[in-house]
Amino acid sequence: MLTDIHPKLPMRDKKITKKFYIEKLGFRQLGDKDYEGYLMIKKDHIEIHFFEFKKLKPRKNYGMVYIRTEAIDTLYQDFLNKGIAIHPNAPLTTQPWGQK
Image (cartoon, rainbow, N blue to C red; front, side, top):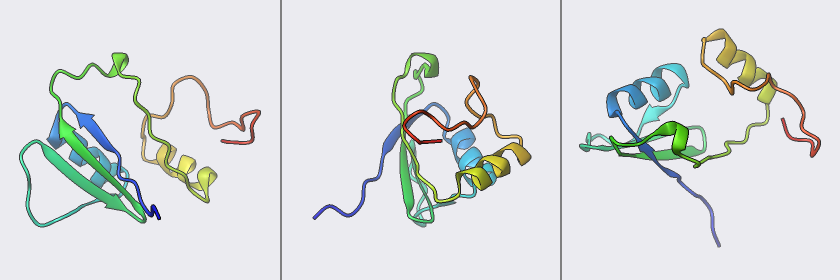
């Protein structure tokens, strides 16, 4: 039986990635050792791992991860209040299939 999945995503700069996820999004760093070029973070039941990929070109990267929440409207407003950049194409809207 599968119980969890932990996405492993590329990051260009560990310091910037760590600061954004911990200070802006409220994640915490996992483990008591700081691995060079690798970052593990957690918030609630979500765990994300990052590996260093300095040549990453975000506009040419098609990778995505959905993180589900029971209170998307609250989370969205929290992000706006913190000045976090959100998807540039539209505000939070309900899609035809019911997802926001």
